[in-house]
Every structure is written in C-alpha cells, then in structure tokens.
Image (cartoon, rainbow, N blue to C red; front, top):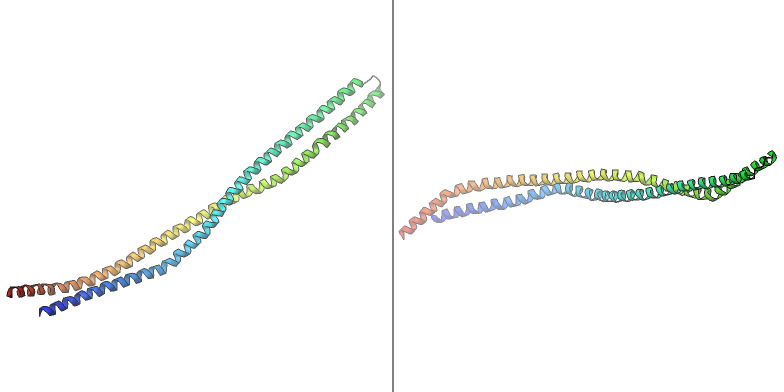
Length: 237
C-alpha cells in the first residue's frame, strides 16, 4: 500500500471521527431539548403556582398582622371603657349614698315626739330619697348607657378582630406549607431534570468514545505503516 493510500485512509478515519463528534454534539443538543421539553413546562407550572400561592401567603401574612394589631387596639379600648363604666357606677352609688345620708341626717334632726310628724317626716324622707335617686339616675344613667352602648359596639369589633386574628395566622401557616411543598417539588424536578440530562449526555459521550476508539484502533496500524514508509523514504534520499 502506497504512502498516499495510507494517508488517504487515515484522513478518511479522521473525517469519520469528526462526523462522530459532530453527530454526538447534535445528539447532546437534541437530548437537552428533549429533557427541557419534558421538564421545563412542569417547572414553569410549579413556579407559576408558587408565585400565586406566595402572593396569597404575603396577603395572609399582612392581614394576620393587621388583625392582630387591630385586636390589640380594640382590647385596650374595651378595657378602658369597662374601667370607665366601673368608675361611673361607683361614683353613682357613692353620690346616691351621700345624698340619702344627708337626707336621713336632716330628717333625723327634725323628728319630734309626735307620731304624725314622725310619719310625715318619714314620708317626706321617702319622697326626698326618691327625688335624690331620680337626680342621680338622670345624671349618671345617660353616661352609663352611652358607655355601655359604645362598649357593646367595641366588644363586637373586638370579638370579630379576635376571631380573624386567630383565622389569618392559620391561613398564613397553611399557605406557608403549600409554598414550602411547591418549592420542594420544583427543586426535585430541577434535580431530576439535571440527572436525566446528565445520564443522556453520558450515554451519548460513551457511545461517541466507543466509536472513536474503534476508529483510532484501526488507525494505529495505518499510522505505523505511514511512519515506516516516511522513514524508508527519508533513508533513500
């Protein structure tokens, strides 16, 4: 076999290796495209769901904080109104007791030995006590009623805020779990995608190496022959 024929065969083998490498590169690109086609829609879907649930979670977190703050403020208002109501009732009782004591003391000083006079004084005392009660009631009852009415309204608000302050943290915790699970699922998909692509590319590379190794094995005797021919040619010169 002539030197040119050997060179021609070696060149053909090298071209064959180039084609194998080009084919492997195409297969790698196709494998990547196939894996992306399989996993990217799933990953995108998960990411879209995560964004949606994260939005709900952010809203629930903000709302939970808002209702807890609202509940705490209303609790202070209700507590202050209850305290004010207690003070008014105490003042009313004290004022009435004072007036009755004054009337009783006044009547005692006017009591004579005459039973009729005593009876009239007692009746007068009763009337004055009733009048005093009316005066005290007229002074304090509207204030107490207003406080009780406001207290009822604020207590209703407090009850609602307390219920919602309990509800929204639970909703926040539920959404936190959902988002956490979705992030975990996305991570698993990304890992699975990477593993699948790596495995497919590895198979392509191994196939490429195997084919090239066969050709390189076939090339070695040709390269040796060529080297001998080149050496002989050089010696003849």
